[in-house]
Image (cartoon, rainbow, N blue to C red; front, side):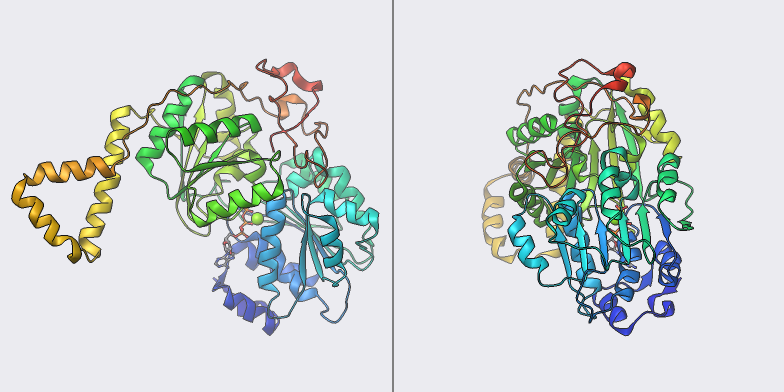
Amino acid sequence: MTLFSELGLDKSTIKSIEKMGFEEATPIQAQTIPLAIEGSDIIGQAQTGTGKTAAFGIPLMEKIEINEEHVQGIVIAPTRELAIQVSEELYKLGFGKRVRVMAVYGGQDIDRQIRALKKKPHIIVGTPGRLLDHIKRKTLRLGNVNTVVLDEADEMLNMGFIEDIESILSEVPEENRQTLLFSATMPGPIRKIAEKFMHDPKVVKVQAKEMTVSKIKQSYIELKENEKFDTLTRLLDIQTPELAIVFGRTKRRVDELSSALNVRGYMAEGIHGDLTQAKRMSVLKKFKEGSIDVLVATDVAARGLDISGVTHVYNFDIPQDPESYVHRIGRTGRAGKTGEAVSFVTYRERSQLYAIENTTKKKMDKMKPPTLSEAIEGQQKAVMDKILSAVEGEDFSLYVATAEDLLSKHDATDLLAAVIKIMAKEPDQTPIKLTEEAPAFSKRDRGGYQGNRGGGRSGRGSTTNNRKDWGQKRGRKPAGRGGQGQKRENKQY
Ligand SMILES: Nc1ncnc2c1ncn2[C@@H]1O[C@H](COP(=O)(O)OP(=O)(O)OP(=O)(O)O)[C@@H](O)[C@H]1O
Ligand SMILES: [Mg+2]
């Protein structure tokens, strides 16, 4: 156990950390903070939800010269929502020291960002495309930057982003540059790319038997494509998540799924790269507040997002590669909490399941698809739990007179059964037709991490973050193993 007070941090940083309610450092924090403060380049790998943001954020704060009015640190993140979230966490970490942190990302008015950049922030968090935009416009100069962080480093160094990252890095003077890379996953080929532009990097890997978090219960259901939707709604009825994220393979899939869930009476909305930024942010806000309880998402929401209350993750479509699986399910089971992940696997996708289990070193439990009667039971149990917790914990004296009146006229069992019927949402079986998606094939089967950059660059136009969406334009024909040369147009973000 390491206390933050043992890490030799500035008083102002300790004050911020206390205010955030952190007591002990997590293992990745305890191991990387001293090394980073010494000035080493670091590749930090630790499971999802274990505090990697503060692991780079704290040393970043320690290095800031508060009286120097120029950008000293940049953090690059793959999605807009993650850039915003990281900037918020860094703001809190730097609060005691009064560090100015700003996020720049696509889809937000660039003139507004330019005005904010004139206020001399010390740290910029951004998506690659928008950072480059500002660099080209000379509204952002990196000549005084001494620390560069790549959050979700393996994703940032994937072929889709690497050119942008290289361009940004070339703006940062090399002599004093400290480079910090963090992710829950770091495939070998990507680590090799990373090491090329780092100085004698120290690899800090928090040792865990499995790559996924042990507190996440992982299961899979083998089923046919056309059984997926009923299975999902039954699971939602039985498992009654507080908040759930349902991952779909393509943007079309996400749109169709969220509408279909609405038709059946669930409070769901979708998020993906074709929506306006305002819409993306409002959907996420509603989800965080709980005014919707199912978020349907492409992989745009797979990495880094830290939303408390996410108890369940459903892979409606199995992810393209094991890393994506690790990140998707890592949206639950964060900071020591428990979580549950269920993945749907069609018969043709079984090899994908094995590939995932091989990488994570963890077997998923096989689950039977729930039946309709189990869904009905699930709903009743949820109502029963509510009634019992009200009986035990709430003041219902205002209702006693009415209850007594009813009991004088009707049988008690009949009355209670009627109440349960009204309260339980009977499974809605409105028929739903979804467009079929091609089965998943690993990215690696398509020629390693060599995919072309599709869509727009992060931060430009409506195609922003539209990487990785096979399928949408391909129609139903599976690309299969012969799909190597295929353009990665419009990818799954
Ligand atoms: N030392 C700590 N004590 C308690 N909570 C912490 C501590 N450090 C971080 N947290 C909280 O844990 C949660 C997860 O942290 P964070 O988002 O940094 O995880 P991560 O390792 O980056 O995960 P991912 O791989 O999904 O990006 C956050 O809510 C964060 O505020
Ligand atoms: Mg993170």
